[in-house]
Image 1: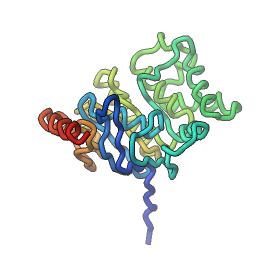
Image 2: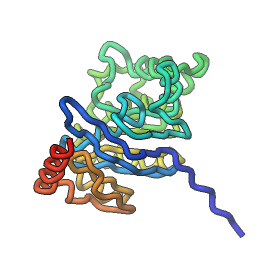
Image 3: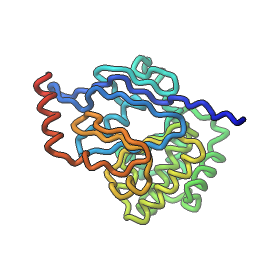
Image 4: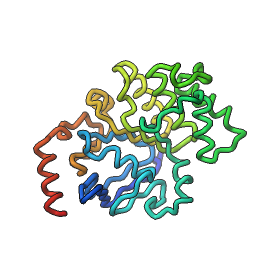
Length: 254
């Protein structure tokens, strides 16, 4: 009789709050877990807390309250010198950390490997291999201004993958792409997920989320209002009345 592999909780949020400024909730009492090999969309209106949630996973920011566990480590308790070791396990695809314009594609990926302490002897082989995986190995010596939007997205993905992470976090990875290129990128992410990479994506793309039918976490005013398996885009994310109700509750509580 075959035994199923035991599911491991790779990311855990326990009653997490994040407040900004003078008592404004970016996230409120967030609790969920993500198992190894899951593919999860995080959706919501602008300001709902998607980017904040993603940044908490890699400890780019710290929560105001609560616990966050990543691969068995409680990340909020890490010393600063320990944070780079956590980030070696996580690939980040974020528009705000774009490609360096004065470096070639190869050099951008090489820098990512240096930053995470990868052995220098592996640089060339790993960079070439990763660019081939995402389909842009022919652009290895091109500069960012010489490649298309679709190629840029794939290079950003390659930079996230070049450290061989177990978890990939992507914040609006299809935001600057037309529908065909966005679908191509999403198919590539799905293929990586099938190879075992845990993927968490913040997205506004209603059509892609609905087509993919993955797990969907829906945020409204920093509160997790839905957590659904094999789901389409949840239009509760656009409920302005509910958002206002939550914000009023938060102000009264504070």
